Length: 214
Ligand code: DX5
Ligand code: ZN
Image 1 (tube, rainbow, N blue to C red):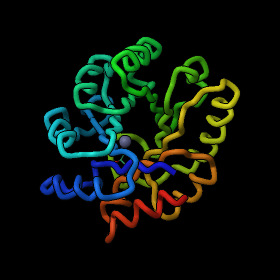
Image 2 (cartoon, rainbow, N blue to C red):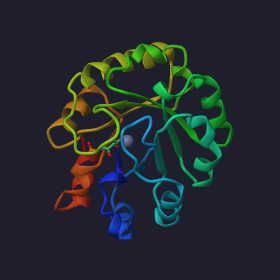
Image 3 (cartoon, helix red, strand yellow):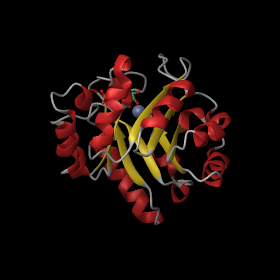
Image 4 (cartoon, rainbow, N blue to C red):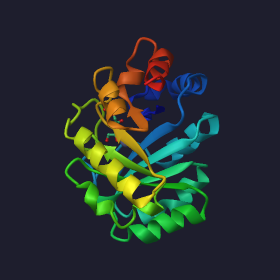
């Protein structure tokens, strides 16, 4: 299992300490949640903070844009040195062009779906994607309860990926913890995002290592 801890649950007063923990851990990526207060009812952090984080983080950045008009921000995300840019299907009309633009500047492209958006909206773009991020909570806040319908969506997405020959990985975001992570692994998730479960743990490095073993 790949693990992408979400910085949203980190201690913002001591970010350097938490990034150091991530660097020492087995985490595959660092998940950065960008919110605009319009697409989601919350505002998190933006490019000045992510620039600072990028300077000291040795893991690839997994940037999750919960913002309207994600196509405006491709070059800024690239300038962070990010490995992957996730944008929401619900916030983008011209997904095909945006995926091409993300690839053109050397990043991987991922489309994110809210819990109520069906997997079928990806049918005609799945072959172009490196990853699909299924939200297992409504986007906007950490620490919410896992929506169990996500398990059925993983199975459906896996079928679509196989049928199309797509290379896309399946990433899950929201409510990942000791109880839900094994179910997600069994259902076929490739990457787990975990915020509060990792950063509120007594031993975050060990918690990441446990998720990796799934
Ligand atoms: C929510 C974010 C998540 C969030 C997950 O909108 O996309 O990445 O940090 O938090 P937990 O793991 O606490 O549910
Ligand atoms: Zn996220």
